[in-house]
Image 1 (cartoon, rainbow, N blue to C red):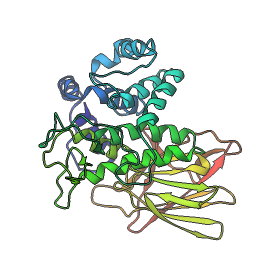
Image 2 (cartoon, helix red, strand yellow):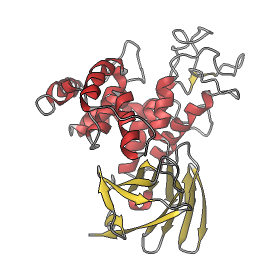
Image 3 (cartoon, helix red, strand yellow):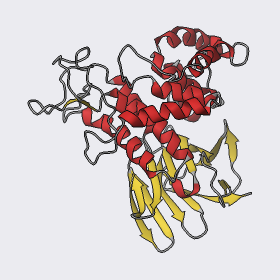
Image 4 (cartoon, rainbow, N blue to C red):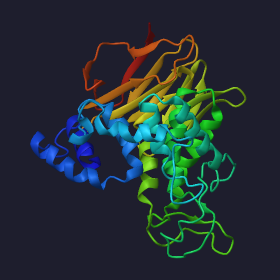
Length: 355
């Protein structure tokens, strides 16, 4: 399912980059690959694909509307703490449960799940502990050096950052959520050594203090980073304008941001609750007018495979006094995204508020 939908997205939004399969072959492949999706990612991927036109779900997901897929969320909803594992105080399935609960409107259980995540995801001014989901035992199962030890940025960091940052985008006044979520997102990269090897986690005990040399259980961590990588633009009451994942400078009423995160395809402007994502193209610059709220977006030049950017505009946070953002000029819409023709240099588009 992951591979097919990724291929579908690339072929739908870029020119001649990948081969687009026929619908019949796509359905056949989805039935095979769905069984290979890790159980703790089903909820997150279902929620993303379900909300995106042009993406396809396995047939069993689509039966009878919500079909059998609602059975698991309903089962979880009946539990006081809707997550569990073979390990006590585990930190693996919470992001999936949060996604299911939010999608089906079980807000009380989503809140319980998020509280659990924040219980083991700390905000500590240290690269190894900030946003690092508490984990001790996985070196026993997926490492060269098998011992019980506080693991730094095991895959729980990348995965649990997903619900934390999703919650922040709905509540941009909660700076704590951004600190924890962004720490977990970036923590996944600390498991990559200077030669490019991706380890399961970092050994925190003073006799070692290095990544484990066995490549085990690292895929979910990198998924968390890839799913979350973005630049966040925030006006903090004490620190003023700051950017997570980019460089920022203030020139009068204009805040100019250069996104520098791993993908440069997602930008969140907290003052407007504005979540900008690109299905094609790259953000080169974002400018926010602090006086009138206008947002000016600079997109990177066209390439062989990308003649147009596909921009989605969402506002997860409904803030008082903030209208609905849309492009100042009329643009074609495909699969809920604005199609922006790209120039050989930077292409600029202005976003303004409406009713």
